[in-house]
Amino acid sequence: MASKINYVLVVDDDNDRRIEIAGQLEGHGYTVAVAEGGQQALEMLGLQVFDLVLLNTDMPKMSGIEVYERMKADNGLQHIPVVMMADTAQLSEIERVVQMLSTIISSGHRAQYCSRRASNRN
Image (cartoon, rainbow, N blue to C red; front, top):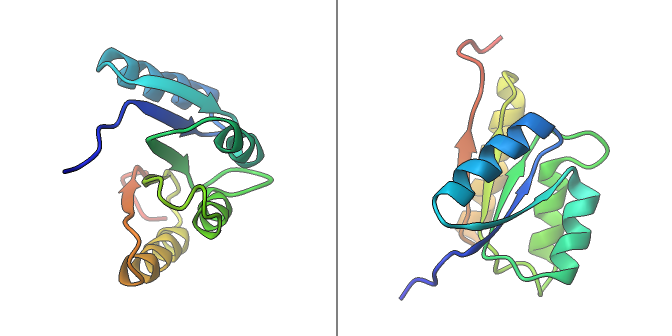
């Protein structure tokens, strides 16, 4: 039986996008917390229990990929499902995320990949 998702952490350096995503989730009955970047997300994950993390890959200082890798290396956090959001038009970054997730999925971890990018691939 799948566990119910109630508490979601939205991690994105773009304030408008954080507000938009959080508002959509709250409108559907979820409890939402937000983090402006990777370091803040890791601090929050160490203090609170989340059911799901929505994680932007493209953030300064600490990328979402690095946050994800740290989560999966931490026994207390590795069970939390993560949805990776890539808003870059850089195909190489999207391919890197897909490669990383393929490795994780094949090693027994569950992950999801969500890409929100520009209509062109330039």
